[in-house]
Length: 63
Image (tube, rainbow, N blue to C red; front, side):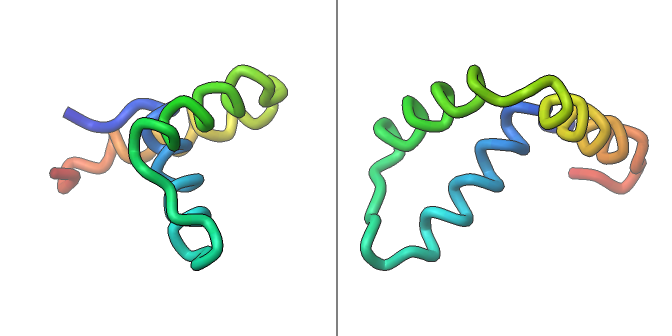
């Protein structure tokens, strides 16, 4: 099953945070933080992640 837009967004944010050595995040706190960020994102950002998810879904080699 291909990831949905929120999962892709979360992974993107997680990668940004994990590269910051001053911000060691545990997964539970990270999930809460990303969910709050997602709710505040404008429709354009959510639409972008819809498009990313759709491209992945259409890629038959995704696993």
